[in-house]
Amino acid sequence: MIEKRDFYINGAWVKPAEARDWQVIDPSTEEPCAVISLGSVADADRAVAAAKAAFPAWAATPPAERREIVARILDQYETRKEEFAQAISMEMGAPIDFAREQQAPCLPWHTNNFLRAFDKIDWIKPLGAHAPGAMIALEPIGVAVLITPWNWPVNQIALKAIPAMLAGCTCVLKPSEESPLNAMLFAEFCHDAGVPPGVFNLVNGDGMGVGSRLSEHPDVEMISFTGSTRAGKAISKAASETLKRVTLELGGKGANLLFADADEGAVERSVRRMMDNTGQSCNAPSRLLVERSVYEDTVAKAAAIAEGIKVGPASAEGDHVGPVVNKRQWEQIQGYIQKGIDEGARLVAGGPGLPDGFNRGFYVKPTIFADVTPGMTIEREEIFGPVLSIIPFESEEEAVRIANDTPYGLTNYVQTGDSARANRLARVLKSGMVEMNGKPRGAGAPFGGVKASGRAREGGHWGLEEFLEVKAISGWTADLAAE
Image (cartoon, rainbow, N blue to C red):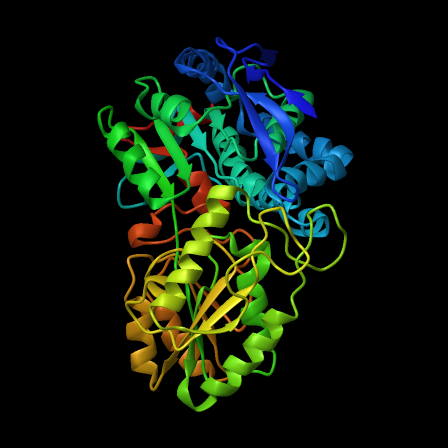
């Protein structure tokens, strides 16, 4: 049993103000794997105070020096990346090979993209030749609160903490209590990399306690949140009293438009992309819209692929999907599967209950429904599990109408051999991201959505901008600035 009961505040591991234990459950076994402490309002206040005190010196630190310090976090990752992957695997159920190859490497991937973008920032530049003496300066916003989820835990930490520190902000991280161990390792990386005291702070806690206090704290200038749309609304309301900047990366219900001219690997690519991370990704392509002429063939292929996907414990090496994160999530997914059956969708793979051979662990059968119609619960609501809905369409126009008829707008997908159609769809699909024919987002491209998916833009240049204020200066004297 791992015990991590301290918080990282002002450059040191400190005891919480109140002892309130929380058991982290291994979703593969349903057994406790760690005990941590949940914080209180006093702990949140202490962390914010440390960040506030550290801000003036960190903001004044030359950008090149900030860059050097933050880059050293990568050295710490390299020496402990196996430990990092093991922690993620155990606490949130990612199969260990997936944790090693996809989850843990999010830290160096995003950090290197941020460093590349950071090197191109003009911290102060002329507005233009038309306005002599007018300058535009970029300055850190101040103390930033970072609230991260359990499903891609270090991915979200990297997308928030790295740009915050590079920008010159100080920060307080509240990770999900479901997957806190990787966050505490990240705090150790920061400490050992020489990040100055107070620049990065960590307090574990739940949303109602620490999360609520941080959202309303008068000394916090910004909140960067990733999680549910419901929680995002609550944070926005709390933050509005002090007019904080709030960036939200929320849920999704991605449409994946598959046309008759799609390449041979499109169906398998679509199903496996949905089932990755056991469907626990906000940008999962959970609605597969299929052109009518290839509909039944696609349904049969998709069902066979899903039935062939192995399910197993996170600790086992190999190509399989693991459990979902906890009992509440498992029960919610089971409810959606039953709802799909009750509302008349055709179950072609998977279904309710545990997979064969399991009597414990939060495992879900990779499940596919065909003949899903717009308006069904499984077509409208984010399930956050390995459940794919297949919907037929007759024309490109109908496919676009179905795809855009959702409260969400995070990622949409297109599978077609027609380049003109692909480009056309990329412009009319209402989402923050569109991925075509299996091509992933470019390095440093922004991650974020529209509508109920929030409007954050995390990653690369855009992710750094979220932590910066723009200042307009007039009457600037160039000769004095050069001195």
